Figure 1 (tube, helix red, strand yellow):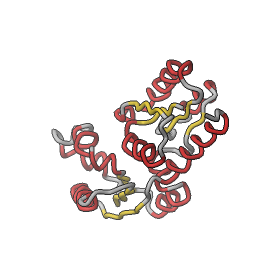
Figure 2 (cartoon, one colour; figure 1 turned 90 degrees about the horizontal axis):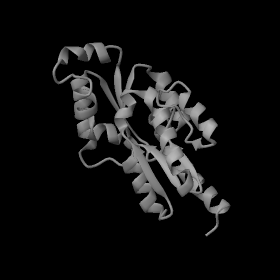
Figure 3 (cartoon, helix red, strand yellow; figure 1 turned 30 degrees about the vertical axis):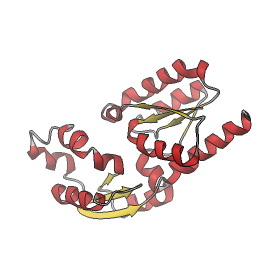
Figure 4 (cartoon, rainbow, N blue to C red; figure 1 turned 90 degrees about the vertical axis):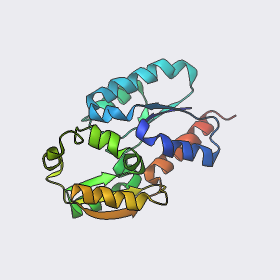
Length: 200
């Protein structure tokens, strides 16, 4: 079985694969930088699907819609491939009901995951040019009020680092321990379904 995943989920999927002994599972991660150009995600996923069909009995996509405006779902319908439900990783880590409650409580929320925490400087600060133009902080984040750290498997200093990012951005801070959320349950179900369809 092949999982086509966003590179931002590589650490979590690897941990799930190891913990569950999913030796029959291969993972192909696409660059997380695609999130800066979400219109390119559907084509990139389609390319991997078509290049991999003859080598795998089943394929599953570990992406939310991720800003593609339904274009990823259109590709997956054409290819006959399922994906994890949800708009983005924040939703499936927190789970849909809890994410909806977070969003309703404060629409102006910036979400951090373990991945984004580890790569904040590269993806946000340098990626948005804030290292060269710090005056753009108010342009990008002026409508945000709080930062919520959705923690999957935080390290000893993760909360401290997340609090520092919130302070740097001038945002209130909150933390929610999510674990792997729907990512874990959906992948477990997909692997179980493959095992039933193709018993070893």
